[in-house]
Amino acid sequence: MFVHIFLAFYFFALRLDVVAWVNIFDIFLWNAAFLFAMAGRTRIASSICVFTLIFYSLVGTYLLGTGVNVQWTVLTALVPTALFFDFSKRERIYLISLILLVLNVQLFIGEFFEAPYLQNDNIFLQVFLGNIVVLAIIIELFLDMIIRSRLGEVHKKELEDFKNMSYIDPLTNLNNRRYSEVFFKRLIRDELERSYCFALLDIDDFKKINDTYGHNVGDVVLEKLGEILRENTRQTDLVCRWGGEEFLLILSTCDISSGYIALEHIRKAVEQTVVLTSGHEINFTITAGAAVWHDEGIEKTLDICDKNLYKGKKSGKNKVVI
Image (cartoon, rainbow, N blue to C red; front, side, top):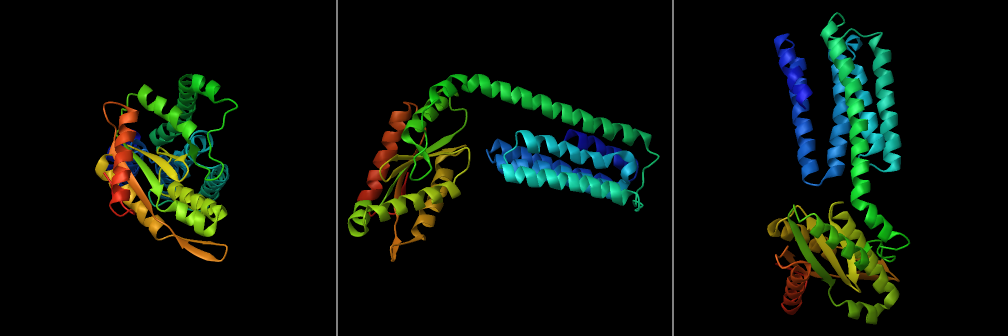
């Protein structure tokens, strides 16, 4: 972002206003990525970072030509894509292929296309952008080394404890209660630097579903709820099956009002869901009790959630109580 601030002033000084405004646009993109990362939305932040680099490489090459090395900036997107950004293996393959394709297209077209603001004789930009690409890749590799080392130190003992233990509920593919205990230790260790909203939610009249349609259908309902919870929470949140038809959510970087909105969104998604199984169309609802972190600790916080959940059940179900 600071590189683009510098370039924006530089291009305004050269009276290349269009190129300067491209750099200003990039400043806003990098700032947006930073804000998403701070909010725990790492997948969005990752995507903005990678596509910003691709965008700048393409537009910069179109405006200035290949002679100033701007086309090589696309290579700086390779390292974060491959190493530590939040993409699946398939997405990484697609992105790396796209980055290499973009580079080759720029190099090929550069031989047959004259840029509107051609800068082939601008030695300063050639040296500056070339060094920026090399320096950025070195910094990315160095940061990756630090991140991996730090994670290794922080989680070394946890990884030893985790060995040969399962933390996934086989029915819903969510974390189980055993994993939540590990998560609680991490929260206490990190001294809750972020705000957290805790919630216990329960499927309304689940026993009636089991008694009417059978336990197999009840399992399908549990699986469906697990799917809805995964789709409507972030990777920084904890979602686990607390026991039976009860689930625990811990929403990170979230106060009670934001938590209520998120839980209401989940409640409405469940209410609008129809489960088709064994020739039956089944609607089901959930009730949730929520609370923010209490100074007396995890048990007190969960106790408040449980009491709010009980209030919701007693007052008609299918609601969120805070």
